Length: 193
Image (tube, rainbow, N blue to C red; front, top):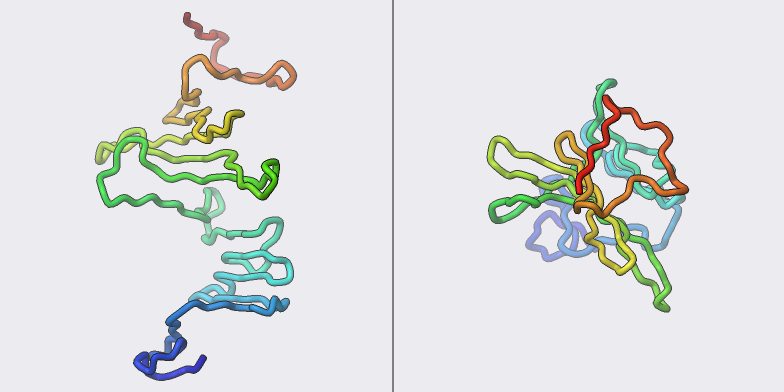
């Protein structure tokens, strides 16, 4: 490709007022060389970093480790959580109850004779109530069950309550996977028929 000073020259790459612009696809490191790729921001030398030798991506770090992608949260706080990632759902309409955003987890399984991505679980942050000014959120945990249903919501974290999605269909612990100590303000177990 050639570099030109005017976009009208119809080149794939051109320089316009100090900016390099692309008019088409861009491929970096087609030859699979062990050469890192780095994008610098105004105050961070490794705002985006590809560690070619270790096949990892670092955001806000020059040494991603232990995972394919590592995101380091910025900030100077020492006594509160630092936001490293934001997921945001948008809509062209009006949000309603149960609208939100989620993370989907899957893994490859070849039991069908070929590579197959199987959805395993999903975490969701949803509206419980979208009333303007008094919105209420909740956290839903969903897992895949034996019949392939990936919409099996098992736990709901809502306000100060943690409860199953459906009444009377979940146990707490197993006969061979028991809890040790349970701490409560009283010893009353509420039951109903």
